[in-house]
Image 1 (cartoon, protein in one colour):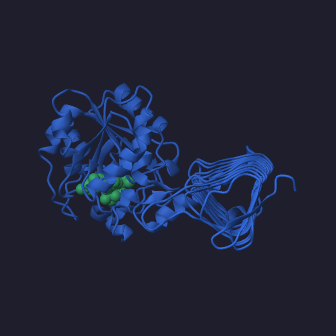
Image 2 (spheres, protein in one colour; image 1 turned 120 degrees about the vertical axis):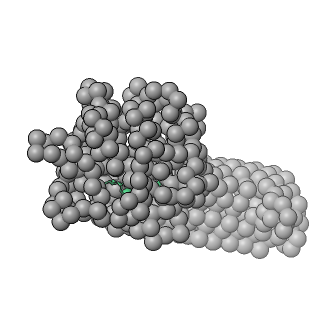
Length: 452
Ligand code: UD1
Ligand code: CA
């Protein structure tokens, strides 16, 4: 179920699109469903509010033909949401497993245990419950004096006594499909919120003499729902802490201040790497061993080799850095920039879709875009590859052991041969042959320097 707006988020964005650890909430639940052992025949995501965006978020991560969508045009409650899957699942007797889209930490093992319990008990419906220290906001599971299921009551409909119950409905259920859809046809919205509650269905089935089972989840944290931004921040914090603890204990990574460091749970970091405060590592980034990453740096979906020093305040996105490189302070890599082993970029250097060869350096104030640079080349301070003519982007190719003088403008498309030199302040408009010195505006050949 992922059709609701999530009023309590106070957001223009559907709740299930809010991100936890950089991923939309709904995708956690879809992932858990797809990962189920003895997997499901299909996983239907019920969308409504911002349906196209929710579909796009799911499709961006899962290319699985078992994933389909059902549209709930008006969000009339969780019972109505499930009713929107009627045409998909009512014709063939089966087990319908209902998952709640705003409960991201649910694991497929717990869902599997719920299904096994349902089948073992031969119940018409089975719900997942858990005991919480603070059950406020959740539906409560009311049991009869013998301890058997009696009904679920929502927070807003509960009496004071019922609100004292600490066993809550986690929002995960198994149903016999025939019994589910026939009960849904009888469901009313006569309650505090005027909604069609799915949570009324088990109680209705019980009255009809059906068997209702309860599986009590062992881990309360798994079933924590996200209804407001405070709960989202709490889960984010718990996930971050868990990730950093694992990196320290299992991977041998040093964090100078774990509490001010933000690492994606999908990142990999090598042994003896030291991470300073205020570093953010996002997505599936991979960082090697023996690196030092200084404060203020953000690394997004990038690969960093071994023994790399990243000085303060760098931004590295979708890029690759080889072994023993140095970056920053204040360097910017983006658009699949590649730094080969032993290369260096210094302060205020931007690399976009550029390959910097082995041992090459651009130490100060430089823009290199759509360029390839060979080995042991030095790019002087203030150099710019002028790659954009206002309409199209053009490439710059610089060879090995080249010396680009300070403040050189390279008007692309252009090629500078091996061992060539440009004088300070050159505006290079034509290709430069190897071992040639050019200078001036526009730059002209001064002499052949192959013997120098
Ligand atoms: C629901 C349960 C509550 C349980 C809690 C567990 C109901 C009536 N209550 O309450 O017993 O303790 O989850 O987290 O089911 N949704 C739709 N269409 C709708 C309404 C909701 O798809 O018309 C989706 C939402 O996008 C969300 C999920 O269903 O992903 C749950 O909705 P929400 O409003 O958060 O229900 P809760 O009040 O948390
Ligand atoms: Ca909820």
